[in-house]
Amino acid sequence: MKKNEKNICAVTHAMSIIGGKWKIVVISNLVNKGTLRYKELERAIPEVTPKMLVKVLKELEEEKLIVRTVFAEVPPRVEYSITPLGLSLNNLILEINKWGEYHLASRSEKPLTAERKTCLS
Image (cartoon, rainbow, N blue to C red; front, side, top):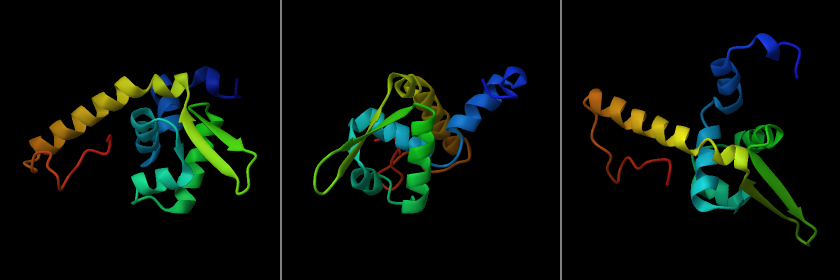
């Protein structure tokens, strides 16, 4: 247990782990598409920079939400997959998506269309 974890609010703790622009999107892709290589993740999330994707993957791996598997091949092959702990976030992600759609609709935005696809696919 880290020094200040004893007195931390659970919401603050959770957001320190899954907060940010890309973590939920990466987790969602691994939940929905299964094990992916780095380039497949990069193609699935074209808006993220390579530097940020590497950072997010390292952080998710440190928190044991994903597993990075390196294969001893030439050229080296690396795959990322979701852990049971990461999979436990799926219902939360679906609820966040539902709320996001509700919020967009309440702001008189267009409903979900091909132009504005869900980031959970």
